[in-house]
Image (cartoon, rainbow, N blue to C red; front, side, top):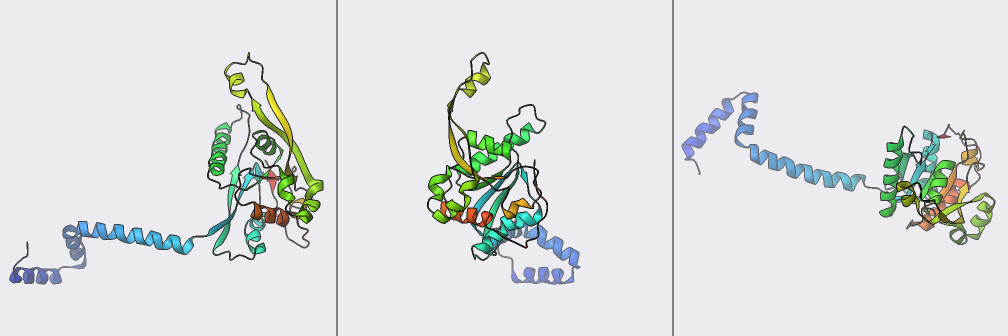
Amino acid sequence: MKLPEHEREMIRDSFVQMSLPQKVEYIFSYYKPQLVLALIILTFFGSILYNRLTYKEVALYLAYGNVSVGDDLDHRLCEGFIQDLALDSRKNTVYCYRALYLSDDASAANHEYAYASQMKIMASMAAGKMDVILMNREAYDLMSAGNYLLPLSDLLSRNPALYAHVKPYLISNTVILKDNAIEHRLNEAIPYFAETEESLNAVCLSTFPLFEQAGFSGDVFLGIIGNSPRLDTVLRYIDYVTRSSDGLAWDEGHST
């Protein structure tokens, strides 16, 4: 209801005479719904503006499986690749899943962490948001056995020069095509059986300059996730991490 003019004038005069804390209290008391609505609107549009200003296109999704990488090497594996692609690092990025732990040892103290890592990998693969994984031997064996890794011969044949370069470092591993693991776990009296094949599905990176001097305690393997939708970029990444580079400063990394 609209107040008469003289009442509105009295309210204005009273408001002018109030102290600052009283004015704040008055405004909050009488205009609380409007203020809350305004705050929600500002937050909503502010979030949209922030996302637009900070959004980066993901050029590649990278994962570290049982591999710990120091800051300098991490920078070279991620930001360095963006620079190698001649992309603007303010608008493009390598999204990295760090500190993934893979193990099938149910008695391990960090079994829950291993399970969480496995779920993250599965979800990322299902969303098409995992392309390359760097692994130690244990993680490589598990990823290969699970048939998560792409056989590399056909992919590398797209770039004959790169294929010739990395062919001596290609590694084969066992892929389980079919087994009765669930039935065997439920009843150990049932013998375990598996139908397997060997697949050339990883590159051993340990002797390449980027990794040779990085202080890893064991071999590091590069695998490609089987459903990666960015295979052209993956080829560029394999070329990048296996390229000869001299005079670079390294810091330590290690496989867990």
